[in-house]
Each structure stands twice: as structure tokens, then as C-alpha cells.
Image: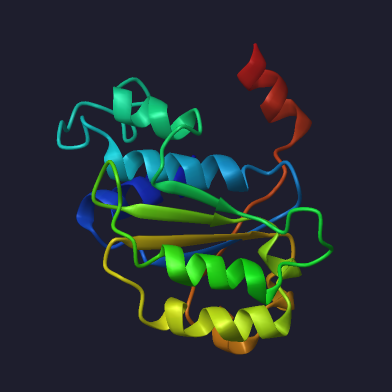
Length: 172
């Protein structure tokens, strides 16, 4: 909750970095956090101080959270064992196309720690000099798999499994 609150504040203030590495075990909310940030970017009620960020009920939030936004682009390895240069070439071409619905384009790079060193090197220029509207969420279990040059250009935020008692309390 504190991480989501902080990221929401960063979105509102315009200080969210253009790239973030979300590291943690499977099931710890990396996708949820990235989608919530994407929804916060487009939320129609974000200027309303009494509304949560994202509100989750406006049409723009719903579109992102339901996976129907053309400006939320999942990037993954498909059937391959690694995220290769071909996937990054697609991203590098796509990033120069303007957003469709809003003023931001968000890339969710899934299993980014499976990116080959060649793919990471191909991604570096885009990571160093992205268009102002582009944001990248590198979702991974092990940020140590990234080249130092990638890690130095994107802050690492770690997610953790919640204790069973906390999950139980939330569900009740």
C-alpha cells in the first residue's frame, strides 16, 4: 500500500521515473502495481484531491485495468526461453509511435530478467533517451540478471509476499 501510494504521488507530481524495475517473487503484485501506475497516468479524476489515484471507476482507468488500452503494451518472450533482440526491436520501433488514447504510453516488459545481454544492450538507447510520453516497467524476479548499465538507469522497487495473516484479514 505504501509503495502504491508513493507511486501515485509520483504520477501526480510528474516525478515518476521513465523506467522502473519491479523485482519480486511471482504473485507479489508487480503486474498489479504497473497497471495501477498506468491507470493513474490516464485517470480522469486524478486532479480531484478527494478521489483515490487511480480511481478505478472512470472509463480510462477501467480500460487500462481490464487490459483494453492500446497505450498499455505488454512485452514478453512468447514461446521462447528468453526475451531476445527481436522483441526489443519491436519495442524500439513502437516507442516512436505516439500514444492513441492519452498522453502516455506504458510498456510492461514481463520476465525482463530473461532478457538476453544482446537484447539489454539493444534496449539501452531507448532506456537512456525515451520519448517524453514513454514509461517502462521491467517486471522480474531477479534484478541481478540485468546488466549494470540497465540497473543504473531504472530504480529497483522490490515487492514481497504478504504474510498469510494479512491476506486473511484483507479477505475478511
